[in-house]
Image (cartoon, rainbow, N blue to C red; front, side, top):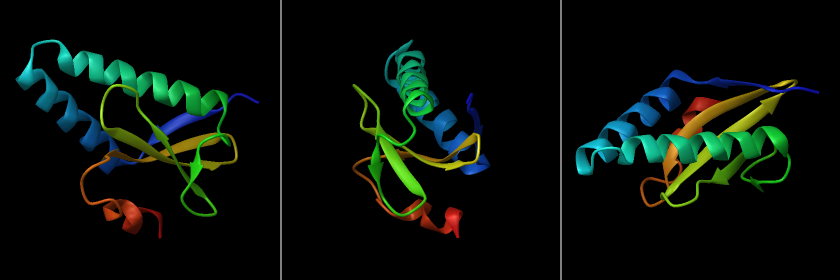
Amino acid sequence: MKLSVEFLEPAEQELFEAFEYYNEQLIGLGFEFALEVQKAIERIVKFPDSWTKLSERIRKCRCNRFPYNIIYSQQNSTIIIVAIMHSKRKPNYWLERVK
């Protein structure tokens, strides 16, 4: 079964903000961050049940190289990206998005 990927609007905003932040630190670093997020999402699509369970419906997949986790849920044939979460800040702020 081929899975599609959808972002909640706040998760999309988090991705954009992190991209901008890293590009401000070093030209091109934001693109490297976005590539790592893309690779993590590809791993999720390939093996959706393989990552750490946070609850019955929510899982997280860690990005390589950058301190971010992809918080997601699978609903039928769709992966819903709930948050692009910095792993050192406010660990449960995204919970209100899944209620």
